[in-house]
Length: 339
Image (cartoon, rainbow, N blue to C red; front, side, top):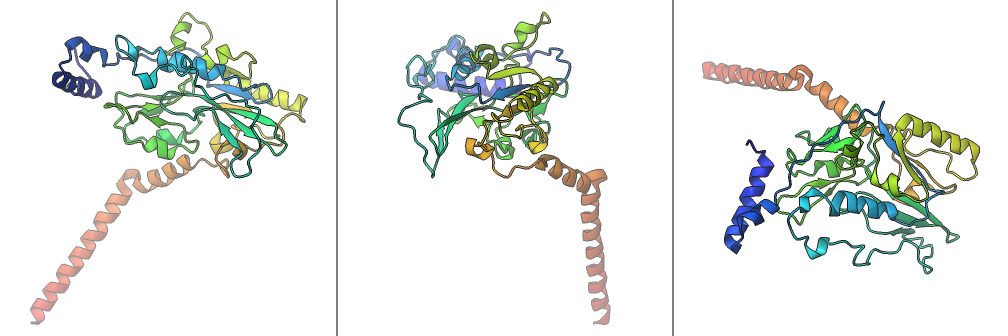
């Protein structure tokens, strides 16, 4: 059976370790993640999520659901012992409580984090304490941008934007670990498995390779976080429909929300959109400050594609070098004739 480059590297690396440590062939098999096939479900346009901060109570059920669905119970761990540092933080009861009586506004750092996105957590709940010591929550995960910087920066198309459903997908089989996607993402979302011999990038893919397979019979796709949120603070569906719902809620209760629907226009628009609490600005919640509607991924592509279109830039360079070389050759010939 044909194997991909990453599978060969995994087998070679683990086999080498097994040979040095007296491991068995079954141990080698246990370390190789089976291939996953991403489902393709008709969605009638791009999907997304709407997060309503006024409904969120900071319970972190969404964090746990995502963690168990997309990390702890994934096929990567079949037939192997989970290292202690990767065992369920919920079973060990060391998940940081998001609400604590001692929380007070700190002008130097008003944000309080319950873990940040890393290779284990594809979504997290974070909290902002305002000057009156009121709590404001925000859910952070991949924004599934309309024009993703990560996709633009990836040199091998490991990051791709699915035009049918709008999901920004990651293919670990072609990833070379350059981490350009991390640098290009203005929301600081993609994370890298530094601790693994054959690492990959980890980010939210809207549960496309986990829960969407359950919808193959024609049911509406779902995500772990939206499925289990007890307050329905985050809902999943068609992005256009979610945007209409966000505008409806804003129009009905303008006093509850920030007047700007975050994600409607910022960075060229995102698949995940937010209704934030009134009086709370996006930068208070950890979103990048001064991130306008212009998408710099598109801007850079326009410049680069214009310069290199039809090989204009290389031809111009080679033409200039040829001209200078010819000119210098004539100059030296003339000087030799004069002598």
